[in-house]
Image (cartoon, rainbow, N blue to C red; front, side, top):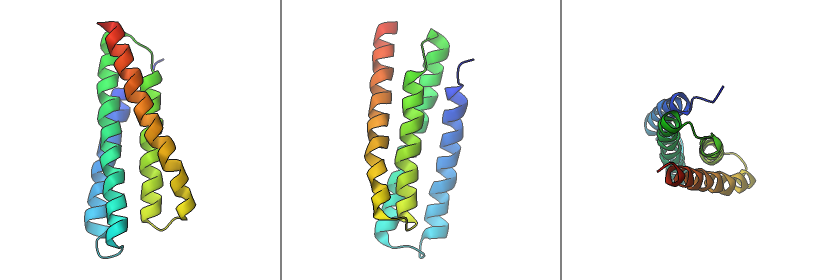
Length: 121
């Protein structure tokens, strides 16, 4: 059974809305401007990954292509956003070493998606 990247992406988008609202309302006044900036960046990239996963899931359904791109997008979104959320909440700065792996995974996911789409046409 293939993973349902449409459902995963939609769930990640919902999580992005919740975390974005939390940052805008609950964190404002509790953390500094730099931490809020990290939170906003994490939320933005969570949305990018969520929309990528959703689009890939729709593409996958219509073409029957594999799921490598979706897994990269999921891993990238999770690693990138969660590491920045943790830093915004005061985690040790060393945790920031994870963030580039999340970014690289997002890039790999979109490249795999592009290759799959090019081959499908």
